[in-house]
Image (cartoon, rainbow, N blue to C red):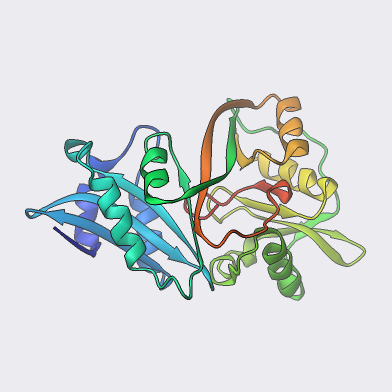
Length: 266
């Protein structure tokens, strides 16, 4: 039994690991392979790859993502073994909090290892994008002068330093600008389309903009105003997932996240 770095040659076999409803695994693992702050790994037993997954590092926090055991090898404890080995690859002194988003299948595994439940994410969908809403004139394309404000707002809300991740997506971002001040931002190219805002007016204005081209939304269940808006807009809640953490508990503001990045990054 050993853990090794995932290779591009492994992509030929990712379809075998794909859980129902997850879609194509190649884009998410290709993203991780291309980024220096990611560490995609595989668990090998008797020459066979039985589990895959990755860690993703910010400045002092980390995420575990896409942890999947091959269907032929489930119910043998390999998920627990692999998750522990992924954790062992992380410098716990530098990365004091490790997060993940747990499915129903993974939740008991992570709980057994020591992860604690922090909150739930609410998942919504509609049959098609929500067009025809009145869009706010305060939502404008990102300009370089907004960079520091965007980074500062994200860190205040997420309690993580995610500049390396956000930086690649600034050029296509939009901000909610009020009297020259950034009160919220949307990054449509980052995962599912991250929306962070310091108030409901800015957050919901950005949600309307995003829903022009999207038929789903995922956000912390604590954001009651955003959930009420989605229900009024006829999106249907169809499942929960669980945000869990290991290590230092951080005071982040789930009620100010109007759409999360993804299950890989919260």
